[in-house]
Image (cartoon, rainbow, N blue to C red; front, side):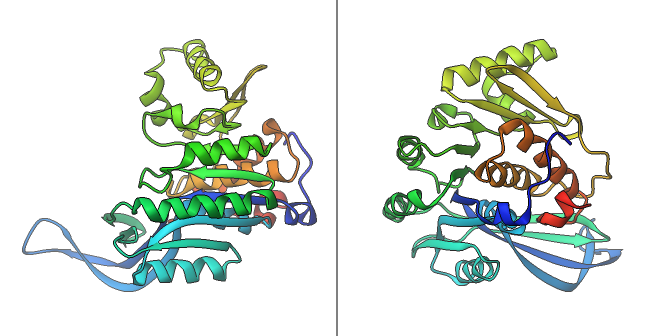
Length: 313
């Protein structure tokens, strides 16, 4: 590892402001012993149900799990899943600032698990009202001075409609800004400190690359054109590469069995943000984020990594 592990006390002082799309992750676990006589599908006898914090809210949860402080700004519906999600977030110690939109259906992802494998996922969702989103801009302005780093987690569900103005405010306040991007319009992330696309997300914007040299050129061109300090490409089994003004810096994937990649990107950017907020440089933070990602893919479903798992084991 390239840097000394951060103490719990040091991380406890780090404050990250997370903005994005909050979701409730539901899991139905059961046994599979036969195929349905009605259709060629397995019959799952559900024996256990679980609810977890998902999407951008899971980023905030990962920050808190590491021992840092996280505040979360988002919009949910005035429905049972929205209230349940808020309760779960507050129970974890996340400072939660949720606007409620009566016309919005809080996003729920329901996963059916049988024999330790995901058999089916069902999504329930709608887009938030513009006025509810506008009210969160005021909340963002109020909370911004209290935090060391701003993190935008874009899940493409409409919760970051005002990201351009919020990112501009963060830059004006000289706060590092990290973005987990979505879609093909990266212009909205202009001026961020670092964005963290995966391979498919980056290829959607810059096109496929034929070699490492081609990748480096495309990534650097995008970084420069958007005025970014760095671009961190997550590459699954190939590890990660950080592109900045001094070149490309890669780290190999941690050798471990991949059990479930759900939420791994959340863990990576959460770790990166927490360490930057605690004073680490991006290259050092990348190494720890890579290790955290390697740990979390060994867990089933949306999960987190603790300070002890990352820095002690």
